[in-house]
Length: 258
Picture 1 (cartoon, rainbow, N blue to C red):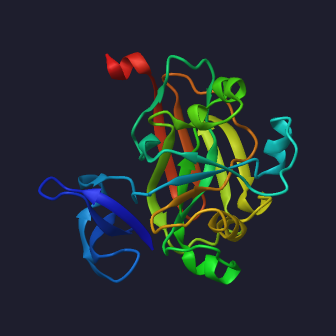
Picture 2: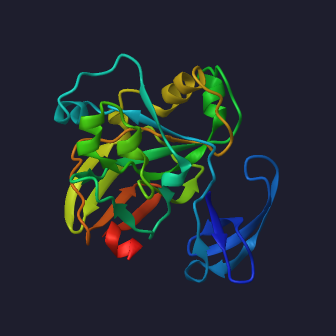
C-alpha cells in the first residue's frame, strides 16, 4: 500500500492511501490503528506533503562497493552513520537550492527506510517488524564542503538537501529493487539494492544499537556509484522500481531569496 500525507484546500494535513491515481483518507495512527476510507480525491487535486515527519534522518555512507571505489575510499567494517536535520527535507516537486558557498553540489539517489515501531537493540526479527515501509530520497551533498570540513554535517545539512517522497510503499521487496537517477535526460546512477554492503535489516539492527528509533524516523541507506554535479536549471529524477519517482528541479539561491 502507498501511504501519502496530503492537504486539500478546505482541510489541513492528513494521511491517506493511494489507489492508482486517487487518494482515500486514513483516520487514526498510520503506525498503529487506523481506518481506511474509499478513495475520494484525484491525485492532481491534492497537495502531497512529506509522507512522514521524522524525529531524525539517519544517513549511511559508503554502502555500495562501486561508490566506495569512485570516492577513493575503503569499505567500512560497520555502517558509517551521519545525521541530516529534518529541516533539510523537501518533497516531490519542490526545488533543491544551491547555496552560494558551495561550488560543487551533487545528487545521491537512495532507498529510504521508514521506521514504524519504536525500538532499541533490535535483532533481525524485530528489525523486520520495525520497518514500516520504503520511499525515495536524494542525499544532496556539497562535495567541496564535505572534503574541506572532514565531517559531513554542513555539507549534507543545508535546507532542501533531503528531497524525500512522494509516498511510503509498505509492501516493497527491498532485497532487489532497481534504483536509477537521471539529471535532465542523462542517466547518472543505476544499481540494485542487492548491491548494498549492509542491507536494510542490518542497518536497522546496527542503528538501533546506537540510538532509539521512533515511528516515522527515516534511514537513508546509501547511494550507488555515479554521483555527479547539479546546476541551477537542472531537473533530477530518481526512480525506484516498486515505489515510483521523486522529481526535483534545481535553483540558485538568488532565484529563491530574490
